[in-house]
Length: 135
Image (cartoon, rainbow, N blue to C red; front, side, top):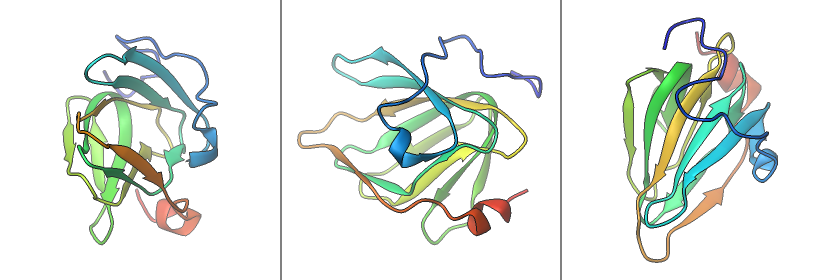
């Protein structure tokens, strides 16, 4: 993918992500690609969209970036810029957030690492001040 990425990639963008909209700042789209064994969702973020700080209890998550430009940040660490081809391994119990850059659509496959008792804990939004400090 290149800088002209507009949200449509090799996987379906899916409908507006209304199921989790309360945990996002901005508009995202979600297409569940697999719900058996390993849950895999194609998450597409409009420019400026990001999810809230959250924690994957047990199992963790892997992000496979498929298009656009975005950010990933763990609590207490600097944000990492993400582009197509990047892979992020998120250990269980790690507070983090991810989302699009202000000027770019962003898409990734979110792979839930299987584990008995896994869950997500949604926390506070990423502040505009924190987000707007990123390039």
